[in-house]
Image (tube, rainbow, N blue to C red):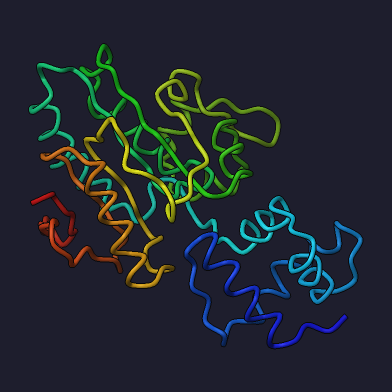
Length: 270
């Protein structure tokens, strides 16, 4: 069954309505590449057959599978490095001073994929600030992709994943080798929890965060969707907290003030 331009427009609309990801029609070839294994696993013979099923069967689980297959899950430990230097040198020490009475820190790694960013922050806290051992520290990781959340909860990574950005001292200190995989230390996993959550639809959290990492995801959304997400993120952040975005992203809208520190920009609520 051939896939028509109408079918491709339907797929683009489905992806945008469910995830906010606005796909350029010039990249329609991505559907064929990323959905092939899905339609083949369902015994279908073409992308057109998959679209026909989506349009006329009303199957939310199939729709979610399509959305997840089209989601990019690029991540690594200590990705980009500079933001983690900023955390260690400036942002975390400032927060720790401000929270001395509470002795509690709460962070959110949004669009966390398979969890490397959340675990990187946990390692940074444990290694660089050992005096926080008796503090209540929690790192929430969220992602649209159910399979990625399951992987993050397991805390198990292949050799090529731990070889990307993870310092050897951290690998030896916070991971245990199990065959061809490396498993995150239980004490580190205890401060990280992971939930499936869609940035397009989430409500502001009742308990506000001290720091939010929303990195390398906003550029997939339209300008209006970015503004909506950033408004709800603002409502989920404490007044003296911080927001970290990706290097090519910005929060140019009311309520956010950019701060530049050693060529890395972060944002604080106004």
